[in-house]
Image 1: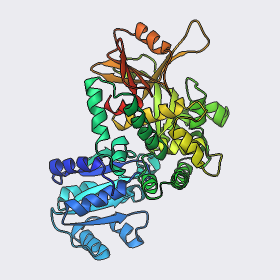
Image 2: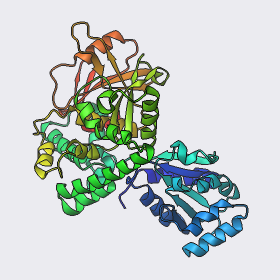
Image 3: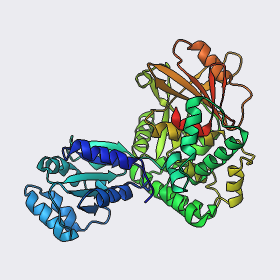
Image 4: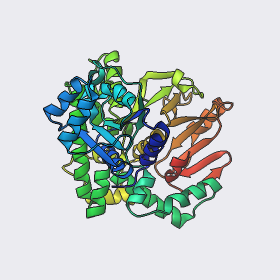
Length: 443
């Protein structure tokens, strides 16, 4: 198993909770939830049972219809899975728990019983139809899990030094030097192309063949499309998902839903659909902050948003979905930054992914340019110390940053720090921090 940071969070939960809560790992499909839960059971407990509700027998499912006799429940689980459970030293994993709502509801009573520890994993858990008929247990501690981040990717490919080196230069506020910057950018672009899905990373390590990696990612995208059909059998969610790269490429100030679905969809239906897609953890949504300040959640515009994909590796494959596979030469050109297309939206997606994985809600802001028909736009806004930090993303170098300048003039009393994310080395231009994209995790 690849080393994952969430493992340390599980250790912290086990130590602090001491059986008083269960932990629910939420995340998109194929990001490694089941793998890390089972590895945790193997390493940290005397024994464990993993119940995968996607393949569980009818007899197992029926156990949760009546939990009035927990002695009987535990005896049956031990018989069915041929595992001896030891009080306070065993773990029970409910994998894909959204497929057995009664098992999730039972957590309240299982935790109160206090004999064993419990980990739940699942996708699409928050969708109403999966929880409408049950009582959501308050004894759950939720952990959001994301695709493997850049540091985890480096660990997987055997690089245990580069990330700490980058962090040190960021903290010192010093450039790495042209040669080192090029090396780090190539490594980071490789991460952007392969992505953070464990299967894709394993395929890359095993075959060193981008075509094989691309095939894995296409399989995952097909699974996501199947999930979207569960959300919305009309296929609208799939259309919205597939159109994310094209929508970002138009450089519009919002996702133009009408250009994808036509004008028939009602606004309330779109809001519901977007909320459910967010719940699937497969997409990230950045809302327009009407009044950019530290309390952006209070003035976000739910009808004005941009969508990103949870994993930039999947985003790269979706960009070229019209072809049977993303040819190796396209990957090579992307890796060396020689593809002719404007790839600014690819860098926007990776920045969105990193910010979200670090616990930031995503916001952006546009405001009128009186000298042009085009608006000024700040790609991302994050809150720090009761102020805001505007972030502008460039796909290569930069010649100007007019939007940033105008924004900081307009909201000078609200801005703490301002960042330009690009592909050149670290530098500081007066009070503007110009950071290579691989330093975004440290913001």
